[in-house]
Amino acid sequence: MASRSSSSSWTAQENKKFEKALAKYDKDTPDRWENVAKAVGGKSAEEVKQHYEVLIRDVRAIESGRYPYPNYSSNGSSD
Image 1 (cartoon, rainbow, N blue to C red):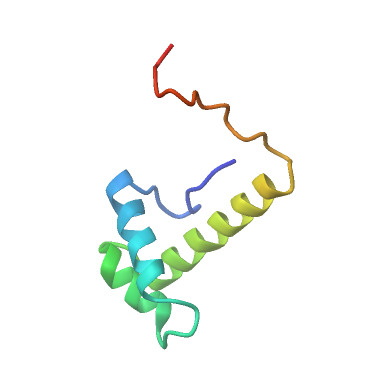
Image 2: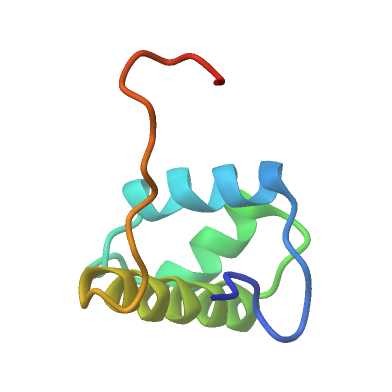
């Protein structure tokens, strides 16, 4: 399950900016992808749109049960 667009790799910092931009610029925002690209920096509107499409595909695959949810410890220890 890849969450990277085919045209470029994304850093953790870029992904965080991407997430924040998605929260700020919803689907009804005019020029949404241009705004998200500006917020991320160094990415084109097409790159952020492709990255979003991969994200949606990944989420749907997880929700459909194709991938198991991680089994995180509830106490926070790293055992």
